[in-house]
Structures are given as structure tokens and as C-alpha cells.
Image 1 (cartoon, rainbow, N blue to C red):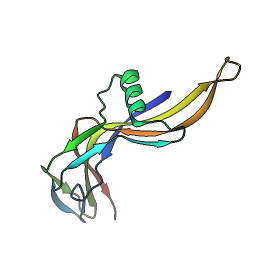
Image 2: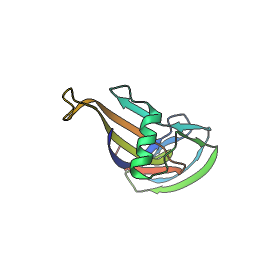
Image 3: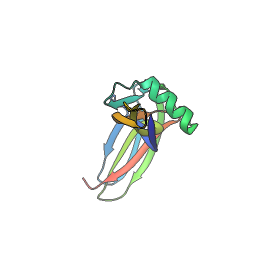
Image 4: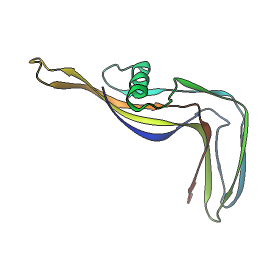
Length: 135
């Protein structure tokens, strides 16, 4: 398998972990519901989460995990500039990987691409991601 890794905020998708407020002012949020953030794999060739996880750990020496628990609490406050909207999303500070899977060619002199996709891999580091929009 061949991988390309980027830092990525792996979001939690359940209620009580994503907020939008504004325009302007301040927002104060807390995680209101516990849950788990797990590996997400998409693409072709039937690659499993455990295979991608093992490959990324071996290739990049990063501390990715199959899943990380999120507990209730972790309050965060952020000011929002005038005429802007603030967004906060709780999640894991993990990695996004673009992967490609190959097999040996019939003449054994090369390789043939049999699938590709992406994987979002959490770490044990969790927190809020903040960004601004105009609407």
C-alpha cells in the first residue's frame, strides 16, 4: 500500500459537538454528549480500517488509534469578529491519508493499481476546531 498523510481534524458527528453563532459577539460551548470518534475508510479494493491503521503507524511513526472516547464537558469560549459567524466543531487532532493499493503485475516486473481511497485516523488528542464564515 502507498500512503500520503496530512494533519486533519477528525470531527465528531453527533449532537452537542458542533456549533455556529453570530454575527459577532462571543460563543461559549461545551461537549454535551459523550461518544467515540473512529477510523473512517473510503475507497475501493476492500481495504479495512485495521490494515490502513497498521500501515500508517509503521510508515509514519504517528500515534493514530482505532477510536478515541469523547466525554461530556470541555468548555471553550471564543470571540467572534463583527459581521462574521463563528463555528466550533469538537473532534480528534488526527490525520487524513490518501492510500493506494497495488498488486504485482502478471509478468512480475511491475505493479498494477487495484484500488485507492482515503482514511481519516484519530489520535488521543481531542479538542475544538474554530473557523469563521461570512454567513
